[in-house]
Length: 126
Image (cartoon, rainbow, N blue to C red; front, side):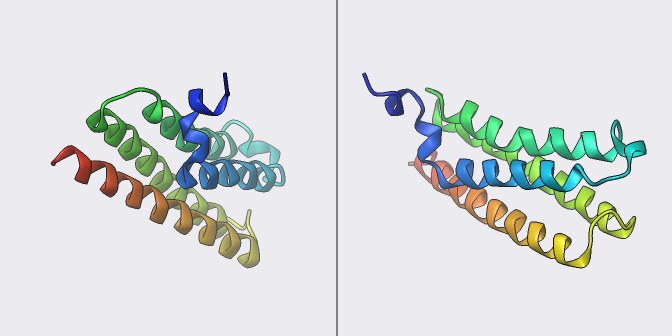
């Protein structure tokens, strides 16, 4: 039995991009001040982890409406990350280059996740 059939989320671009985002958030927050270890660093990491986790959970043998709900949760986390990255930049924890690079990845994540939710929602209304 192939493992792929049991892990449909791995084929979703939204999940793949979400995984990339988690890796980048972890890399960037390693350089945050130690005083942020249980503050902004922790919050950013939790929000980032939530994105591919919710996409995976939603893709697992659920109704289209349930999947759409999990995608909405992932989108909420992506928007939370946007706010936290802006704060990180304003506080001087991210360089302009780092902020631009991760913001571009975040925009990609938002686009593909919104697109997936729209596609799922269209199937639900048929």
